[in-house]
Length: 319
Image (cartoon, rainbow, N blue to C red):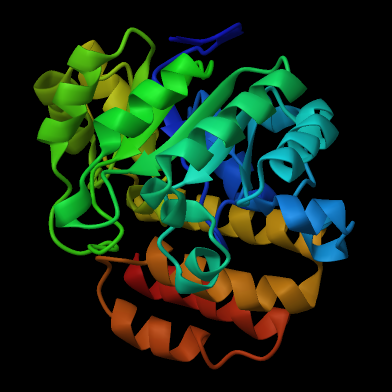
């Protein structure tokens, strides 16, 4: 699997997700086999004004390379400058044309750009001139069902020099509801000569294999299916290779949750770890008996020590 000059060891990529794909999360996904991990979306405007919080999103580690840097914004030249300024931090630049969140939409960025194909062309052209790094876009089917234009956006992207595209086949209006239309991925693959990466509704290894079979896509991008479930990557690789697929033991779940917790502490310190790991711990215990009680308790924790004890006690009781 190649994206421009970037050679990947397998066709499974960990998605860029705001509030999720920070350095600790990316390291966990990398350790479980992801060929490429991407940052949270990073504001071109935030980089321009040298915002501390924006710069923090660029924190990286050698172990996670190759790393993709995802940028968002609405102004071509500012995005070009942003791409140039961050290319040393990763091996690939990705442009966000899909975020459906209202705050991003109001600024004219994310999936709002799908309503302005001419601006999409100007943005990609400007960024392409600014960096020699492999360049990709992540986008949705269109703004709503009456304006599905993913083929048009993809052809523009190819014409302006992108090296691969990632389609989440839902419209902005759908947000994350309904079902992703994988048929659109199949149509996109037929229409393009560059790699097509599929995203949307990949929650288990069987989903990954089915997407490859049904769409012919070149790679898949794991988003929500990786929450508390980094094993999906290795399981999918095993299934694709015809090897037996195994489920993680309780001991393995605890080991990885603990590792994620420690990475978060090392990276961010206690205060942010408390906020971040509540949601991740809730995902790691999904499907285990008494998980609901654990979730209620973990969301009331006020110290790192309390959080750690709750985790250890829960898994000890579940064993």
